[in-house]
Length: 273
Image (cartoon, rainbow, N blue to C red):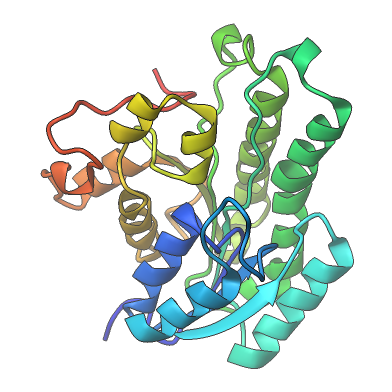
C-alpha cells in the first residue's frame, strides 16, 4: 500500500509552486489533499488557483478539498481545519508553505510589507499549526512540515533583508519549539529548505532571469517532503532538512532531472553556506 494512501494532507499556499508540487506528489499515493490558498479565481500575473490544483489532484489519483484561505485569519484557519477534518475524517499532515517575501533593506521596507511577512510567515505558521494540532494528535504518524530555513545567527543573512530573514526565521522557531513541545505526543515537527533556488513565482519576481534558468523545479522539494512523511514521527522530529540531503539519504544521485536547464550549475539558496 502506498505510504500516504488515505492520509489527509493540509497544505497552505497550494495554488502554485512548491505547495502545488507537494500536493500532486502526495496525490499520486491516493492521499486526501486539502488545497488552501488565497487564490480562488485566476490572478492577473500569477498562474494557478485552488480549484485548478484540486482538479489536478484528482487526476493524479487523490481526493481534493479546495478552501480559499488567508492564513492570517485565525477564525478562518480554525474553520478550515474543522472542515478538512470533518470532510476526510481527520488530518495527518500539515504543510506550512504559505509565505510572503520582500528582499529589501530596512529603509526600503514599508511597515505594511513588514506586517504582511510577519502575518503570513510567522502568524500563519503558528495559527495553522495551532488549529491542526488537535487533529494531528489523533493521527497515526502525524507530521508538521514548515518550509523555512535552518536557523543561523550570521549577520550576512540579515544585512540585506532583515525583515524577511526575521519572518522566515520566525517560522523556523515554530519548528524548534513545537518539535520539543509535542515530542512526547509523537507529532513530528520539521522544517524543509531547498539547497538551490527553486523555479517559483517568488524567484521569477525577485531575482534575475539567469537565476531562474539555473534553478531546480519544485518537484525536488515535493519528493523530499514525501520522503520525510514516510519517516517515523516519533523519531524524525526537530530537524531542519535540506531537500538534496534528504534525497541523497534516500539513494538519489541524479539531480539533473530536477534542473530547469540541465547542465547549468544551480545557485545555492539563501540562508545556506
